Picture 1 (cartoon, rainbow, N blue to C red):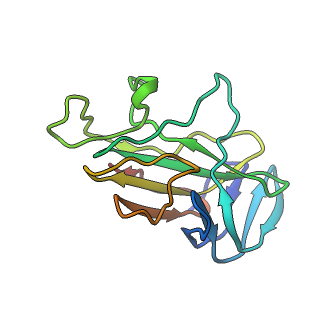
Picture 2 (cartoon, one colour; picture 1 turned 120 degrees about the horizontal axis):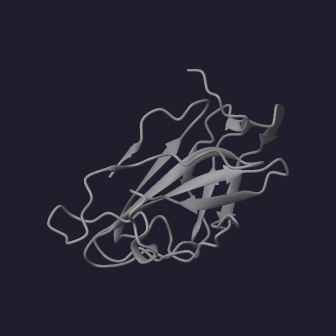
Length: 167
């Protein structure tokens, strides 16, 4: 599949839960491209959930019980990994940005998580979708991706991103 992006992953990172609390890992080395130059990231454990600095500034939002959020993972030329939170629509308020609930919830939005627009000097290499159950919440960088109160799905991408992530 062809893409018009200047920054992209060229292979699967093999995303999985990290061994440290609130971390994830890549189980395979992967190549990526930033502005026409290629780089490689070694398989790495215990990658911290660090939010990408953007303007206007976003703050990490804890996912309450019975909600879903997607975190898009990015890497820069130096190999630093960051994330940005998903949005389900432009009408989302900051407090519940990107979070989806059940079809009976007052703020339910029948949609999907669209891959974000290209960021300067960063390639998207995957996403992590966290769906909490009624018994607990998820806090990025604190809660383990292996916690019992949630279902976590990893999305590895290369080239173009294809279809949106289902809610």
